[in-house]
Length: 121
Figure: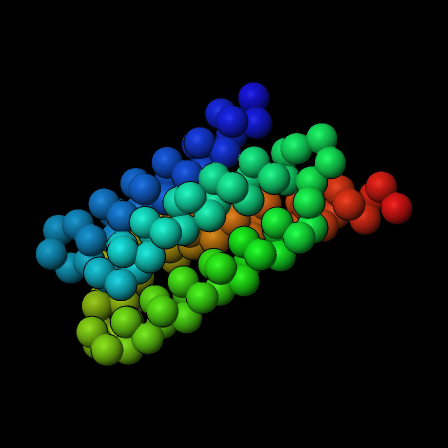
């Protein structure tokens, strides 16, 4: 079951690659950031749902994802923030919130890991 859940979240990020770059108004930096975030998300959920999740793995994945997001921010600034702003304006506040939750799902996996480890101690 943990593989199904981890695969679902990884696949959602791969779908984000298509959604962010679609229709010519896309946020290309965000689209390409979904490619490395998909395996990070998969690993984060797999770790969070293990019998005994590892805090070292969770922290490493969060740092790795942070590096990807820093690269995404730099690429967004270099390509021009108007693509980013146009994309989120086009999506609207509700759809934008859902997309952001999917994009940052690996943060929830890290939080689940920390919560489960804290509950054990």
